[in-house]
Length: 173
Image 1 (cartoon, helix red, strand yellow):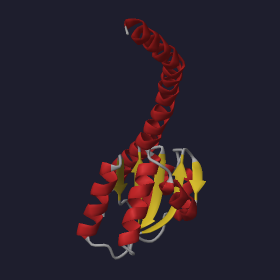
Image 2: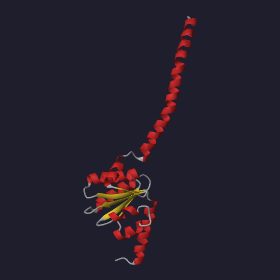
Image 3: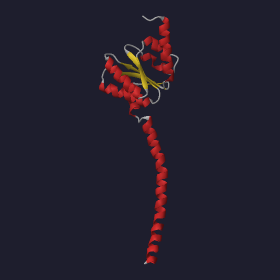
Image 4: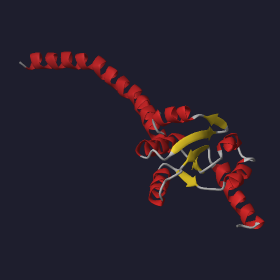
């Protein structure tokens, strides 16, 4: 059993990490093996997130002072917290994809910038394009305007150039 100072350190660590996260998800991992949890951690890390297994009481205390306090009620039984720092969509995709292949992982509830999300809302969030995809789409749209403008101007000048070329060839003949 850990003493009070060790518990205080754990609470402070979880609080610090959770306060930096924009997205927090409570999951049930009952029955998962260490290899499966490691696979989930690797997938979340690749998506810009982390996965923490913490005692429920300590997690509740740690989350009480953060914007993710709304998920404290879901901290019961065997649960863990997935935290997303950069792209919440990537973390939601990693969790939902993992849950499709591993029935032992259950997504309970989430908090996105302080707003509580249900499992259905998390699944909808996972269907959105990632931040990189959205940026690429925006850049493609912004690039299309000048490209189309140049094509339009070229199409306006081209008939004049054809007419001048025809006149030049007629005079040369």
